[in-house]
Image (cartoon, rainbow, N blue to C red; front, top):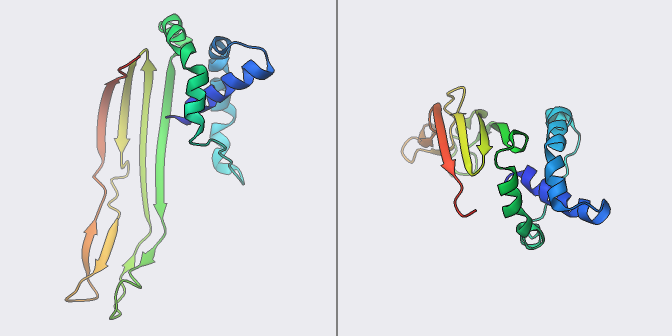
Length: 179
């Protein structure tokens, strides 16, 4: 589940309790919230001192029980409204600091493992029950080591090293069944 979807569900509850709005009214206003969020919050997330995620796994069954009945009529009502389609751009970055095999090797000869970075990106759009996504995984085509162990014969050489898949460009089309 996307974090924005969870925020929408929470906002629907909050608006019904504190603003006397029906969940459908929150849905009709949500594109303004997302537009402001994408312009004024998301670009600055990397520069904050602390980021608090207050979402809890047990929320979903509670939110579903309270809100699920509102979605089928809303989906039918808004299915051809361009302002209600959710486009997205996502990036994924992971970093691992340099390390060694110290502790795995009983006879010395530790192996240095360099720091590693992998970047992936995707963009797409949800339209009705369809999603189309263009993705590029491992943008820089780096070959980071995921695991490295000392060789049992020559302790100074790595025995097993594995890497992520090479740069991959793809187009994904998917359909959400069951609505």
